[in-house]
Image (cartoon, rainbow, N blue to C red; front, side, top):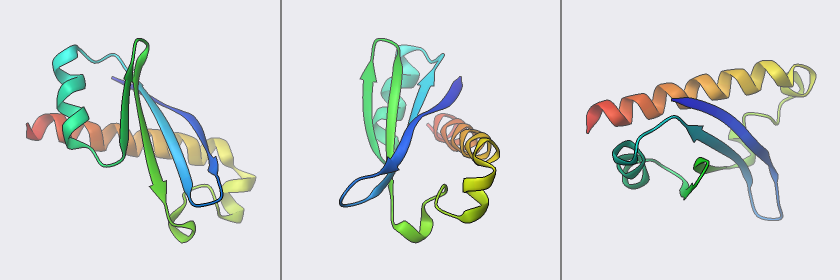
Length: 91
């Protein structure tokens, strides 16, 4: 499984991070679709999981994140990988 941050930012109502997940078989994709928090969209090139945040919990909103965004992106990708792995193992 490979997790990448596809997009992140904010709109008028919330802050979001979109993760692109690849390298899963159809069974794993279906198991994630029904068991992860956030909006899940399965496309031909992977699964896209959109997670919404309140401003105070948004992982890229701090001054430190703005200075070292690559570090924060890498950490978020690792955390999502661990989370998705645990969801798949619990099933």
